[in-house]
Length: 566
Image 1: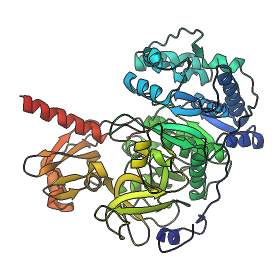
Image 2 (image 1 turned 135 degrees about the horizontal axis):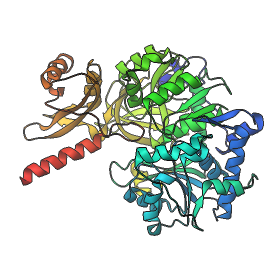
Image 3 (image 1 turned 180 degrees about the vertical axis):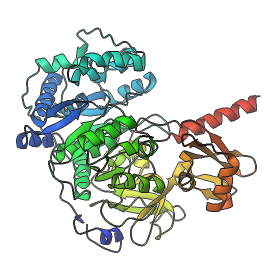
Image 4 (image 1 turned 60 degrees about the vertical axis):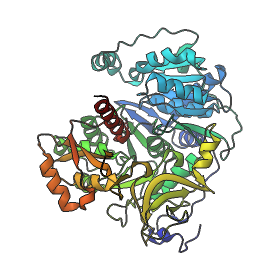
């Protein structure tokens, strides 16, 4: 890839970021082996007081790999992992890869119907799950190809006496009394590792062709699809992350793992990046603002990848000023739009740099990001990463758009998926030649900076005008009393659709429709101003903290159906 007029973003790169990179053709798990050989005693994981060295992590992963082989796992078999952020999640991920398997990450919040679909679609015969979610797995087990379920609990990797106390805390929080009856099909994770041998397994893997991961999409437009990501896809994207974060010190960073590993973003920019860079992963089983604040101060975390709602929650925590957050040097925000107001406030609190990145499950996930150390433009998602091409597809002509013309963002690069699992038609529909069509609407300016205006399907057409929810949300987030905002289009007899705003006020603040209407009219064209408002204590979110716009849309549809029946 050379610098040409077709890639204006390359001229914006600081000298430290390579315009092109050479990616190693090797397996993802080989980086864990390398880290264990070079730094056997270095701490790889910190988990609520318990620490594992790189040698311990490597040995545990090999023990699991050998036990998986004894259970019949062969190259290319799928192993499902349904775990919260724990040392077991890392061991299971790399253990499955060492066994030659394909990892199927499964969200622990999934209900039985979703678990059943994912297991049947992937054909997974082994699942490693958390004791808390085991009842859901057990209820669908006989409707799937599952032969074995390996069960573990958060207490299994806690230090004494926390490991004894935690089950009581867990029962109080969840109301679930964990009681597993182990047998030849239901196995103990801890016991398997105790009986395992730390022996390397010789399996021929082609990094460019063989899959490392089936990562299921959210299923917003139908059943969730399995995204096929190869070892090379994931190695390339993690290497691009290293290149972009050029001030990282190999072996010295402390990366806060608040993003879930079962999400492709947390998996790449936290787990895989930590291993490739010999860093310490500071793992939290779930995002709790006070726990994050305490952990940053105590563990002196330097890198904190997150989602906008995480940073918002921290900024609005009443005790944020009580903690020293100055160790934070860099944060890349993903999964949703990062409001400019949130970015600037968080940087003031930490003295670190918080920038927005952009990507999708299908792209491993990152393709575009703002410069962490360098010029960035307000509202922009940044510049394409090394060896990544990006362009805008004009809706009018079906050809590449002119600068500043809104169209569909399309990308290509070494991190782009192989396709959708067993869905050749869906794969074909999402590619134009060798360009991946993202489904996001945006534009590129003259200097190669990209901007997202919204999801193609989220665009609101009111009175013939195209309205992008993200633009209105940006304005609302700047209001001093607004903590969270989400915009959707609702049916309107006269305009076709009209704009509705869901608002979560900041704690202790009261807001009125009139107040927000006057505010929006000062900052938005009249046709973009919300006509309807609904105030809530919270908005529906994914486990990663992404606001679920589609849930709000469904709620509105059901309301209208009830009104029509009435």
